[in-house]
Amino acid sequence: MSKTIIVTGASRGIGNEVVKIAEKKGHRVYSISRNIKALKDYSFKYPRQVDLANEDSIDKFSSEIKSDGVKVDALINNAGAFLNKPFEKISKKEFEYIFQVNVIGLSLITRKVLPMIDRKGHIVNITSMGGINGSTKFTGLTAYSSSKGAVNILTELLAEEYKEKGPSFNALAFGAVQN
Image (cartoon, rainbow, N blue to C red):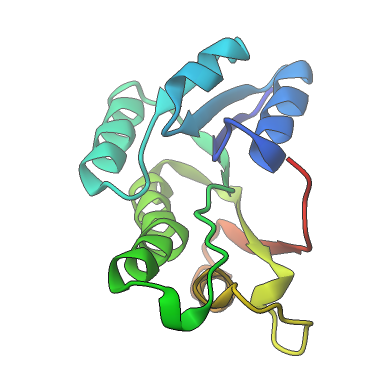
């Protein structure tokens, strides 16, 4: 049976591969990225330009699919901003941007799409081993890994909050991934 899936960060890496596989299996996939050209270059069927650092962009997308009567089976929050820089050299603006995309943008799109997600649906947040307590940490990834740690805790809290009524929430924490 065909499902409707939203994948953020679909222009490259994990998100890109998820969209390719899901479309090949016949699912309706809204591929989301700031870079609409990359999505169109891949000939994805439902490309959407959405900037997770911009609440108006998220609102526009969610309003569009809501007005179309879309029922979502899964949201895969894969988009993420990355920064490899020593802590003392990270500006406030850079630190805020990493959290804006990786935590706040993820929470905003989740909240906006949540009313359209089937109660038996799934929300999967792609995080990082760098955000897992007890895992090996690497210098230069302070902003990135701490933001992914926040996503891990957010996912646990949402899983608890929605465990009775659905949808289900899970996090996948990967190590380094080749693009």
